[in-house]
Image (cartoon, rainbow over all chains, first blue to last red):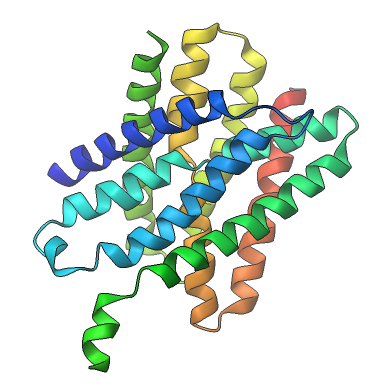
Length: 130
Length: 114
């Protein structure tokens, strides 16, 4: 029950941050630059936090760890908006922009997540290698 | 005022995502991340319906920005893809990514044309 409540609170913060950032990123023509920025930042944070919450500090705080990753970052990033924006671009005869959007989301998301993981060394693996 | 709707929707969306993922994990034993997949494609269909419905800004903020934005996730999808990749499940990783995009967009498109 505590876990659900914590994840919900993380989700509220993530959704609010997405709303605020989405409103402040300038629209680049028909290209959904707001969602792209949000998803790339979120993928970096997800990579970084995935290793970060393995630290000993979080060992007895599983609800806090899940609230940060699954709750906050999971909610900050969004898939449904990507689908909707791409479908709208296709509907308006701009399928090529939709393809560029998907390609940049994929490359950006994957790259940012790997960078986040790299910059936040896995504490469990580090202890084992010593 | 719109912030309240985003916060409430985001709260419910994250909890629903976690609850459904947990439920799917109890019976699904395959490496394919079925929970996130089902959540993302369902959310893609529903956001198309909400976009079309024109129920006003408050409803849009609660359902589309708050609930469905928070319910579906992009970062977990890519985390799962990286985890599949590190376990050499490349075929599953690629089919997971492509099926999420293709089915998600088709369902959003379908919802827009209903």
